[in-house]
Length: 373
Ligand SMILES: *Cc1c(COP(=O)(O)O)cnc(C)c1O
View 1 (tube, rainbow, N blue to C red):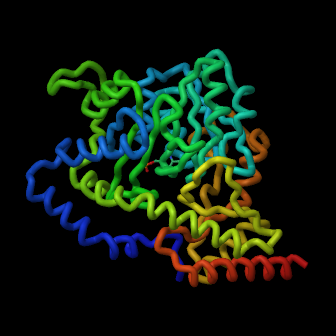
View 2: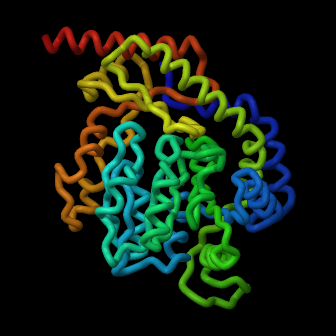
């Protein structure tokens, strides 16, 4: 059995350090908004390259509070991709705004800047590009459109910590960047967690207030907020893991290169493409194949933990049915939804395992062809 992700292997390496950090928090008696949260926010601002970060309960809250801080709500439209995790559009719905979908570039799986402009209306307030699978979006093109139409940009970086576009980390191009520390992410906690990155001091202060019941001063509440604080235990764990993130991302990139080489002679397998001058961090290694659903089943039976991210595009989900999107409106998104499959990818994956994954996938493709004939 080769899993898509094996968190236990990572724990075997850093468990001692993590346990020491957690025990220190337990003994300290300071569990909420204490020294670890403060230090983590400073360390991540330095790592990502922005003025401020604010830690939160989840990546979903990061998106939600980013929209709140920019005063986006009922009657507003936000342009984003349907080829993402539901949290992206859920956040738009939570604030009462309407997600408007633009199709993807089939080479990168990310929102196609050329498709954004035709979706802009007088109601459009913001664009949410998603750096899917750890691959940066074409930020020059997106920021150019945002400037020309005076739109906010909120980057969904939940899968892309450490990823760079032209030497600059994602989350520093738009007005606000949103990160998740869900355990399976490249920098994952041992529970839920999230973060926003921001350069504006005003926006930073607004989000600090929103995460703590809508008031910067205790028992003084200026607006309806939420409870979305990251706890000290998670912050302490994340501080340990932050020391390893570059090394882990490097390993992921090396594994992606190995997979690319193993699949080089297979025209049926479309390996992921990178935009020039980007540093992709391969949260997922996702290929496109024919006859995907059958192959997925065959791989599972062969003990390969392949996964489908995501099996239904968001414009065709029941939750958004009232918006009136139908099949055929986002052809690239719909086509890729039926072809993508993500293969085992984590820093501790071995070469032997990669070879097994590759030969099994190639085998399954051959078999499914034989059946088709
Ligand atoms: C994981 C993820 C989120 C949500 O993050 P949570 O911390 O699970 O709330 C949002 N967007 C994308 C693209 C994600 O992968």
